[in-house]
Image 1: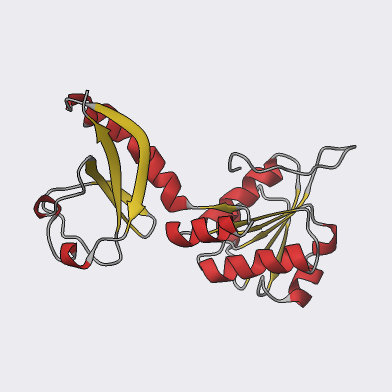
Image 2: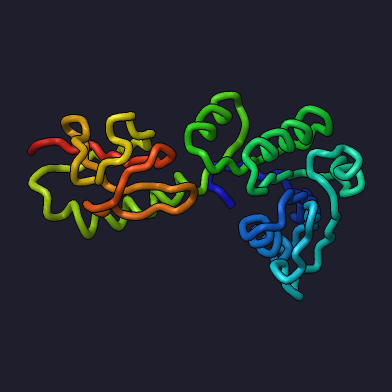
Length: 217
């Protein structure tokens, strides 16, 4: 469960009634963990992959769109304490949590938003969001600090930024671009795949460049 997310639990049993929208790797994985912890879990998706949920999953599945109010009613959303939208579609996830929050008044809602720019925007609107891309960036940052930056003659500010490449960087290799002074190009995120920068890697318009700030000693 993402850090900083407040969970509302049943005061007697400690179990929650949870609806997970999306039965992909993230949604199914979350549903299995919550179910194993004793929560009452309902998975809603257009197509339910029972193989991903596994034989130990003892929750309920409902086939249908997670932005369809009738489907959500069938899933028992009026009793839900937590609603997580974890489909592969950012816009659909945001719409689903807004329906859960504004129409059905679910106490806690959380949307998966893969695009870091969108994630920051929606978080600024007051939605609870989690971004797999940002999580991957943070994980790879720890590895980079240990394996690469230990050899640099300077201190590393832990702050980092993920930016879209300027037009004049698109089509060039990582070795051919010049980050702003005081910044080091540490990695490149393509969708949800984050990798350390390769000098020969060609920068694409849709990439997210991970820039880390450095300071001289």
